[in-house]
Image (cartoon, rainbow, N blue to C red):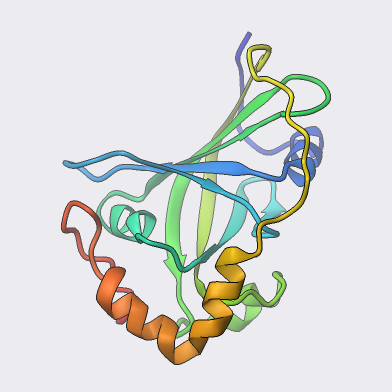
Length: 180
């Protein structure tokens, strides 16, 4: 049975910290809903109503475009081992870029990651847990390094060239302002 909370409890935070993958969902006013799986050491619970997520360069930049238009975001975690659980964090998100005044403060909370693009600062409005009894068990075997290797090989200038070519608009043509 689903339960709603107004904040991230210690139990919820402990569950989040054990997970190896999470899913991010955003949507513009009109256009496609985006749901993306995320991994790496890229998620931090700052307090009971605030989380940070480090986003790395990828094929699209949907989250940035969607949050500029409609700042709502949902993050979902599933238990793939141990007790069944599905956790959703509902909130409002904003992008923090390297040019923003608080960048150094927030980037210092994460390991150095090639291809770092932005950090999303999310104010949590509600938390939902549900049973997750239909989620299968999966065995964690380790992190994939292909994206880090690709970004390291490109270097900082190559990544910015990639942003210019591939990350300036969403798949629906919405601006991301990645270079501003």
